[in-house]
Length: 167
Image (cartoon, rainbow, N blue to C red; front, side, top):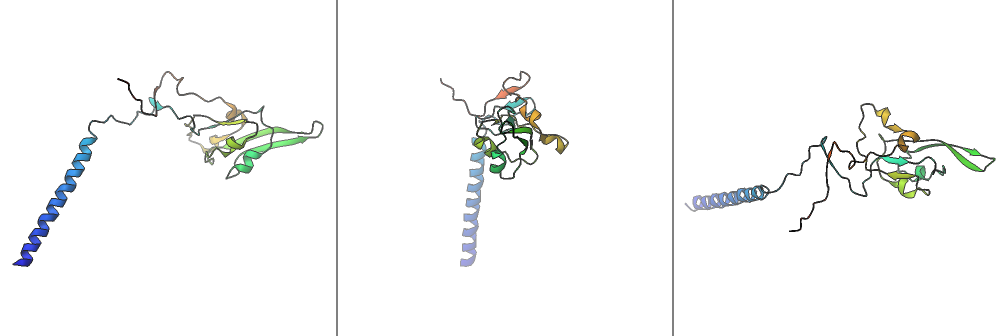
């Protein structure tokens, strides 16, 4: 008789423990009922990126001195710099500069270590294409000024940080 009584007590304890877990789940669910949704309708609403966001790289051809520091600090040796040494002016002449964004890991080392600040990160993050060869940008495509999300009147911008309302 005692084994049956202990089994009944264990069953009761397990039932109470299971009911407690279900109750905890309901309290978590009910605590989320009053919150506003955090999803956005992407093509029509876009988040404003933070100041330190690492998007597409912008390149200024006139500032570049072809020192190739960006290639040396890149973990995957990605930027391709074509230059020729001009012996009469004793300087390097830059012919071509390109970055393949299909391979780029957007670490920002090239921007950080550039001595002439000819590279900068933009807030542009929509780089998707149907052909991977379109992701290989030369100095003309890299020199294109970024499209600002804030200036686009067809899109509702949503701030990334929660705004505190003063009452």
